[in-house]
Image (cartoon, rainbow over all chains, first blue to last red; front, side, top):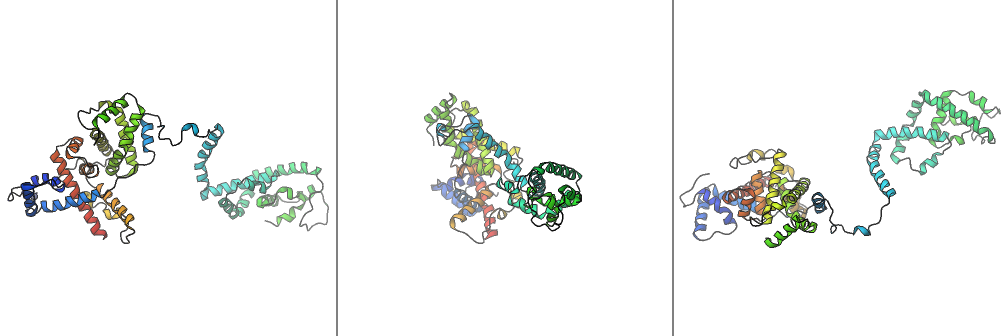
Length: 255
Length: 199
Ligand SMILES: [Zn+2]
């Protein structure tokens, strides 16, 4: 910074008076000397203009509002006790929360991230498969899908994934020996349960009606694959209760 | 700025364990401390954390406050400033080692301010416009070296006098004035460049 002595003031002196000059505190001979240096010095002239502009920019900044809860957080982190005055309603007037409600609140809070994950498409696919196998099991056990719908186990997104991937799911299940085994046992259980009932509901769409062969015999004629397909399509809205075993041929058409 | 006797009494009550007195102190100074932290640190989240830290430190060191040695607000501001400096040393954003004479020009071109502000080509209403200007000035402030930044914050945003600022910063009054001049001028240059670019 060039020192300017011709006006009787040096740059460092000008610098020292600059804040006072901007605050309007200079007067008399001091102000004259300041102004003389301001006009003559190539460094201090621009400095004055810039300092003035900068101060004006800063003066234009307004105070920001502290975030809500700051005071409460400070009090909690210092005294360790929340302020009574800061709590809008007195604690005694607040409704009592039962332990059950607390557990429910905790549980729903804990489930939140899980639901977030489940909603992702790749998990929805897995979830759809899981739901599908659950549907099979429930249908076989006599629970209707309409009952399931009422407890909203089917988010809209899931349903879409479910239908769009159903064909693949069917093929997938065909290859699982375990399913065959479960299926055959369930069939055995059903067989034991059904005799008490009157004749199974009349097949709705029966074509090969020529014989009144016992169910067991007829059933024996079907391949495992076909039965698998029947069970696989059951969750489409048909429960096994609606599907007398004798009428399997009819329902094959759904596949 | 403050009634020395009233504050001294408040502090004594605090030390004696009067929670209401402490709450009054928190209520009185949280806004000021938060604003210093916000303007210095740049982000609201940092400012919130730092403000809490300041009060925690104040709470612990309250017995060391001597009202005969200076105003309570100066003491509070000193704690705040020291914590801010520590914070910036820790977060490696510290430019305290830069000499004042070197300036900050080598940092300025790294990220032009015009990139940090919204599109000015279609000026919305005056309120939005003034908010955008405020954000631009705030961003420019963050580009000043910490020692220039703290000086202009205490002077132009907190309206402290030079003697108080000198106490807080532990430097002579002449140095305070010099830093304020440089801080203001540097800010004006940054903003001048910004507005020349976008307009
Ligand atoms: Zn000069």
